[in-house]
Picture 1: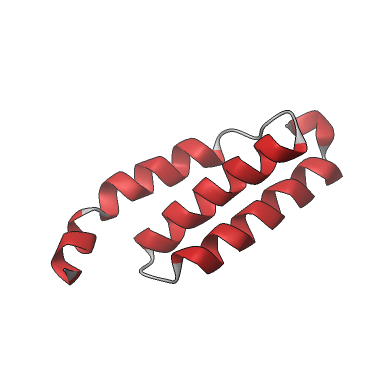
Picture 2: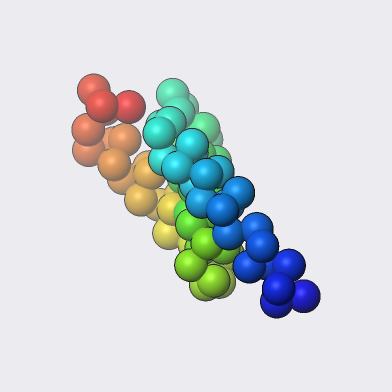
Length: 71
């Protein structure tokens, strides 16, 4: 099973970059986009996906609240 996760590193990296390029208009969208980016990045780095999703959601919401003109 470990080999199958490693074979998915490139697709997860591409997915993480695509989600990092978007922000979301509402709080729910911002959380979902951040969650997807954080989860994909955690999979690429072979870390805990749930923790990555939580950090990604919080970071994206915080960024969009701090810099609304950039989202």
